[in-house]
Length: 178
Image (cartoon, rainbow, N blue to C red):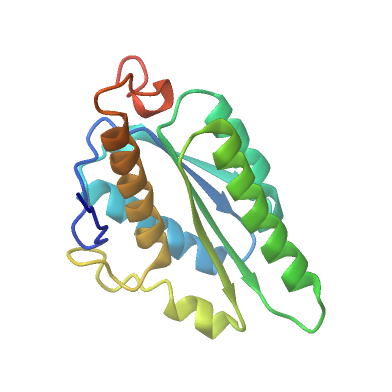
């Protein structure tokens, strides 16, 4: 049986507890990523009170905050949102690589689904083009925050499906009172 993921058709996400870890750096971009992620979660049925937004100073700080959120046991998924814009030095490559590897390691080591909604662009214009807030409904707008939330929902759904017939891992079960 093959299952494919179509971000325009979101699985049910009621009782899903999600942390959004959002960089404050390039806030004009990350605020739009946050809007997109919140819209995607809402469209899938996640209640507002089941989403916690954690702001960190910059994109480099996202992996540690995401790991801490996962280790708290309060979340089924973590959506990581940030923006790194290429400048004249190699700093861009170091930050982008460290963040990607850090999020991947944190997710693999904790077993909690984490998605990479971190833009790595050549300019602010490119970043803004990937964070449209024009239409945050229906078939997946051009907003990478929305796509990261959709991926988180899809990953939780896939992992839950894989666990059917065996004990569902604790991090995929809704937290107590949820």
